[in-house]
Image (cartoon, rainbow, N blue to C red; front, side, top):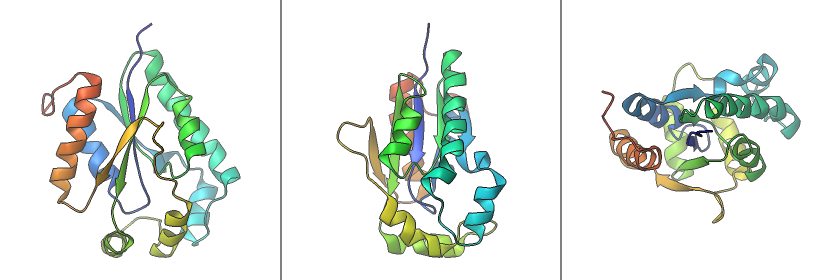
Length: 178
């Protein structure tokens, strides 16, 4: 049975997970998932009210994301997902969904991220939860497959770096599906 390679573009809110993951998916012809779309309404309401989610709140969300990965893996298709995946335990849930799940951790200083969040419109994550997310974040450990990308450069440069990493893993050329 053929398996896919699955990338989770991770980081705290405001790091550009969707900004990076979606164009990479388009360039390489990969299925894309926006993890925010998998949150139950109760989670969105809590976050919109400035209340941090608990691990119990996240469990059904993570299980739905893992099921999405598993479904594509069964078909032998590679994927890319934009998902905070802040804790190793969350990444372990996602990694258990398929044999080859890797992570691209988008990171920079809290000041850069806070400035980006102030510029965003129409997103439910208030800047006030950024410090909570940064405190929760467990960076990739040496035994977790993936890479950390500095997002200080312009988005186009970060997208290009991410596309090269993903393309090398899935055996595709960046820009081959433009």
